[in-house]
Structure formats: structure tokens, C-alpha cells
Length: 304
Image 1 (spheres, helix red, strand yellow):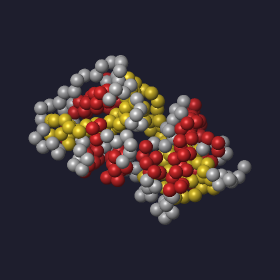
Image 2 (cartoon, rainbow, N blue to C red; image 1 turned 90 degrees about the vertical axis):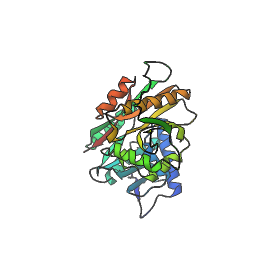
Image 3 (tube, rainbow, N blue to C red; image 1 turned 180 degrees about the vertical axis):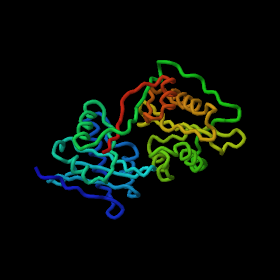
Image 4 (cartoon, rainbow, N blue to C red; image 1 turned 120 degrees about the vertical axis):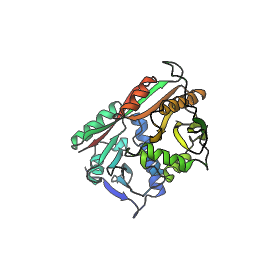
């Protein structure tokens, strides 16, 4: 069987609009077939924006010229290079995934966001190529209509609560996010461009980005909880990003702002809420478990 042709798209040879559309269509086909999204939000947004800043796109085409697979690699804040890979459902078991993996940079950390049977296939593919799990990202969820209740939010009197205001809070929120996630390989490196990509999405709602601010200086952000409902007409909300300024920790702000976000999502009449949390973030896992969240699935990252 002929090997697929793999082409690189980067700053020298950028991804075209037609190629980006083909990648997103392929990812949608794979999601429908597997029951889970093959590309995370950051990687999907990079395709939409045809991002070539520290990002490489690999396109695998079959003998008929159609897109058979796609992979993307990008450098994380800790210097490691992470990647995601997807093969079209009709082109699997033909060496497409292996051909893409061979073109990815050395030392790559490959994410799998598959669940169920697709996760078993991804794990077998990783093992066959000498990759072992090195990181786990837990998806946790709970009902917004039933289950254990969460406590009312309580804040010290030095703080007040308001919603994010476009044109006012972008720089302050990015600074808070960078400080809160300084050691996180992806989240802490967000730029204004990353923020702008998300606030341009259909699900963006500034009322859903809740800020805990200094009562005497409301431009000083102490903590935030960015909630998300995607798709906007859906029934499931997300604890998207919870951030607490390092110099404000130990005051119960993380728990309080999380509860404020849960109250907001419940006020929208949603059925469920979900979140993503690294397995090694023990404090966060403990907080979410105490608020009634339970494991739904686990995403894994593999490396040699």
C-alpha cells in the first residue's frame, strides 16, 4: 500500500484557507465516528486562525489527493513540544498515523482526547510506536439540577464581584492568568491573540467571566472564573478557567469564585457542568470533588 504524502505548513509555507477548512471537516468526521473531539480547543483554534507562530501543521494526503490525516505541533511554556493527530475514519490502518508521527519533532508529547473504544485504539497506537503515558487530564462533571449542593459563596469584605468588561479588563485578566498558571505548560502562556480568538467565538459571553476584584480598586483582579457554554444553545456548561492571583491565595477565593461560576451556570437553566483538570493538580481535584464533581473520562499525553 503506497505511503501517504505528508506536507509541512508553517511560517514559510502557510496553511491555506481551503486546507484549514479541510482539516476542520476531517476533525468533525472523526468526532462523529469516534464520539470524541480529536483536537483540543487550542489546536482547533490554531487551524481556524491558520496560526504559524511557533506552530507546525502536517497534512497527509492519499493517492487520490484527499486529506487522509492531520497533525499539529506547538511549543509549550516549559519548552516541551506537544502535538495532536487525527486520521480520517476512512483512511485508518493504512499507515497515515505513523507517517504523521514520523514527521513530528523529536521528543514530542502526543495528546489523545479519545474516549471509550477510540481511547483503546489510541493507546495501542502509542504503545506500538514506543510512546508511554506521561500526563493525565481528567474530565470531571456533575448535575446542575440534582446531586450534592454546594455552599453559598463567601468572600472577605476586602473584595467585590463583577463581570468582565471588554475594553477594560483584557490586560489585567491576561496578567492574572499568567501569574496563576506560571508553571502550567499551556495555560500560562496565553497572549492577547489567544484571548481575542476566544472572545470572537460564538460562545463568548462577558457575563460568564466572573471577576473577584479589590473592593477599593475594582481594576485590580484577585481571582476569576471564566465559564463557558459551547454550543451556546447547549445544555452543558463548563468551568473553563479558574485563576487566583498567587499573592491572594489562602483566602478561600478559589472556592468562592468557583461557586460563583456554578451559580451563574445554574441560573442559565443548564443541565450539567464539566471541567478539565490535570491529575497532578491535587488541590484543584480535591476542591472539585468536594463540590460534587466526579470523573467522566481521562485524556492522556504520551511520550517516548
